[in-house]
Image (cartoon, rainbow, N blue to C red; front, side, top):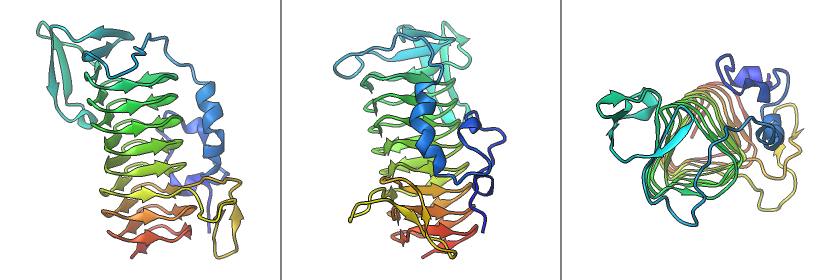
Length: 265
């Protein structure tokens, strides 16, 4: 039984690998997330702080934020590099789009290259979004959210104090509280990662060798690389799924450690 970060995640290309120590439990990264974001070198961009939705679509390119104006946009799949922005026929390589109707509710914000933030998204910092990611209509980022490259925060998906590694996708109607999604994790529509015990108190991680103290009162789930959940799946607080595990649709995964390639039914 190996419960260190190296057994759950390939961190070799992750831009924020320093948040994880190789010999620690993966949930310990959550205990450092707030400090990591507080110390992050946030870009000096004058983000609008309107009391309501953005009145116009904004383009972020080479550190400059401008109103779209005469710019044309091809709304291809951002996660595949197909979001393309042109000014007078010239491609603005790496430009990102914040559509009219996005709400920026304060706190530091960093948006990478080729990112699409759709109308109706509500973002409350600190939030860091990596290159070529999508934040879709109705998404709610509640603060202390670290989203990697080529990720999806989907329609009516709520994220709070959570980490996405690269290519993680929570496409539809999901809730992620105090959780970590590994590389290429895919959450089926309606997946909920519950993070608080009904009876309160610390969330323990159950293992064959006995419970492990997490030190956390709020702790959702750890999903190793390439884990998949089916539609309307739920994980109990303190669920830790090894690589390539699957949670079938309409299933509640019990709290505790589940080894690689587990099938939860």
